[in-house]
Image (cartoon, rainbow, N blue to C red; front, top):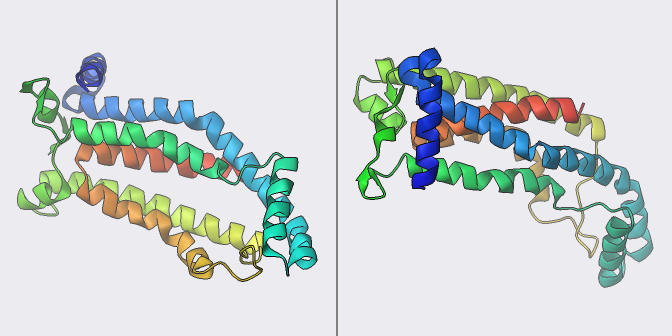
Length: 239
């Protein structure tokens, strides 16, 4: 972690002439963009996989009609179909999984008062008037919602809400356009809870508001930047 802390500190020093006291915050945004660029090939693969899985739905429906009374044979047939078409049902999870280490690294980096036995100097950095190591609760205690630090969170919440509304509308349009049937289990019955999941899915982006509120501001910056990037990226890849 100390190596990563040094990298963030050095990047912040390079950006200081442009961003002054908010240089470390700018460094986190730049770091997030770099991570997303690294993950972008996986995102493209996930988009191709999603399109391929959508195209397989008619064939899977035919397999259900053919093997509906034999769950084991149906399951093997579906797996064989995915293998034959070279479609991985897990491809869509890969971009998110590869980003988790970066998020948790930032979370721990700005949650620890010491690094390598020395004081964590990164905690002294701020985004405007909000310390990167503080949370929304700290901002509320120090000036309230419309205090100097509270207004930083108001801006972040507004950005996350705008992205969430954009994702909500795009997801609703995609679900209406695809009009795919509710997935079935191997025995031909509806997968338990899948109907409810599809109703909740358009609202998932709004849960980012909770994450931003409870994690250190540095980690919240990562989440906000990554979420905004994802919205633009998915709109381009899934158009």
